[in-house]
Length: 113
Ligand SMILES: [Zn+2]
Image (cartoon, rainbow, N blue to C red):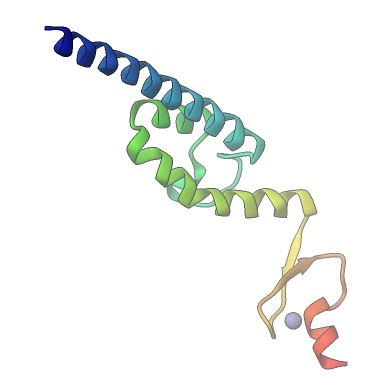
């Protein structure tokens, strides 16, 4: 009797911890996605998901949506960095992106010298 009640209690504590972890990661993902400007860029597919949708997704489908968010996060971070830097050009020779205000590719300028 004592044993089973301990198990039930432990299960309840675990449930509360899980809920806390899920809620905390949902909030973290929401804030992170919002900072990265999720949904503002035309990245295509799930990469365009809005911060609130990411947060709700993580909350209700933590085990699925959290890894998906982590997969898409680098693309969001790149889009966010690019948006902060302004328009970019892509070098036809080395395929590197560089700020549009440069008149030549900084990578090729270095290797050509
Ligand atoms: Zn180049």
